[in-house]
Image: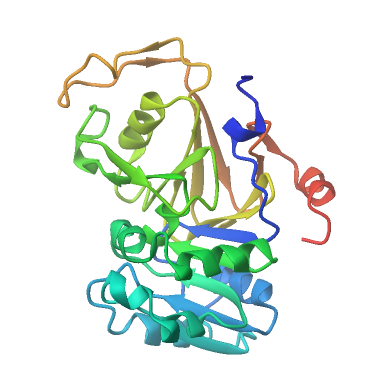
Length: 284
């Protein structure tokens, strides 16, 4: 299999949009990221999924304020306390006629363990496949991947660390995503994740920053940066033999740093100009 095979590099078959946010997106002032979500809801129903939080009180209300005046037709909250609730018809009805879903922050394992392989997950994927928008911030960003990063101490920086990964929702393939990136010093753990599986692209997203994914391309919006670590050309790695407290040793990792207005081709694993992205994703 070629290292630039679409299955490896992150191509998706979904017809909708993913907006993957590094956390702490602005809910006042310009609200560039929330505006991007609202525009793609197209005046329809946006469901705020607070599933990731053990204590969701206040989350929905903060997004009611954040989306106020941005043109969303209706806001609704989806929360499940446990997996049995995810099977209830009344929970599924919350997603009826929704044109968008927004996952708030918390614990990404709560999302997958509570709604994974349930009618709720299936309906969320239907919304995406039919052209809707699925957004997620913080834990809601990490869960978008087929394989998500769930643990790894930021303070260990460039040490191997105690990285743990688990299956995600699989809305985007061939990437692993980390959030609160520069703010929590997570470059080391992202490189560790990429070193464990160089087939995937590592994407680190700063706070108040997002990638807007359409097809096999994404564009960056927000006030911070996005970091893309490509390990497909690694010629040396000590990850398999080293202990958790050892320093990472990697040769020939490729790193791209992108900011607002920059775009990236996930299949080609390269930055692209705004004009090229417009041609590749007409009407976006």
